[in-house]
Amino acid sequence: MGFLIIKSLKKDILSPYLLFYLINQKIVKQQIEEKTFVQATLSTIGDRLKEVILPIPKSKELQEKIIKDIQNIIEVRRELRLNLSNYMEE
Image (cartoon, rainbow, N blue to C red; front, side, top):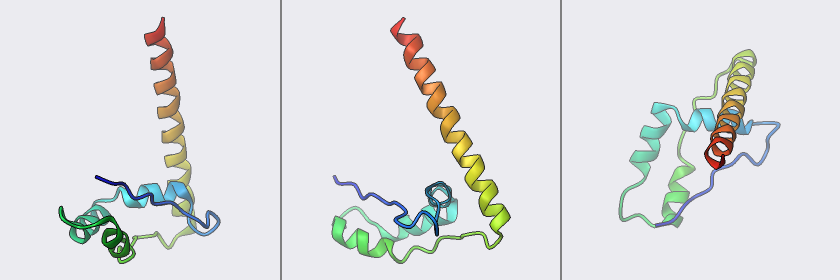
């Protein structure tokens, strides 16, 4: 089993938070599922992932709202995980 790392190399063009949101959309997950199959090799999966179309909102305001919301959710989750970890150590 292997892993592919998907990241935004040009953060000024595509925020990592927006990318995270988009990758988790049902339509994108379906595309990824269609492009991959059990016997595929990582190199061919990587090539086929370039064919996935991301539904990037045209509205900059909506993009900024999504980025802010996802960033906040990730931060809250991080804090909760840290608090739980500290609690478990007591």
